[in-house]
Image 1: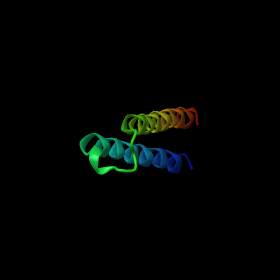
Image 2: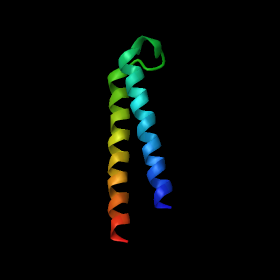
Image 3: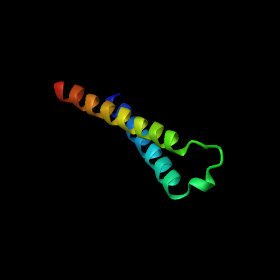
Image 4: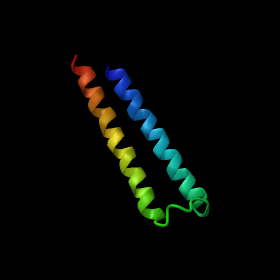
Length: 64
């Protein structure tokens, strides 16, 4: 179960990083995001949240 939770968090980090790269490299191509800075910040928050989740899961797995 811990492994599945870790993989889920890792995949969400990868997705958010890709979104940030797309927004940074081609902001004109994303017409439905008029507030690019806010959108990038939201993606960074997702990355931070899931990195914290991975850290917590690692702590839990080390306690076992």
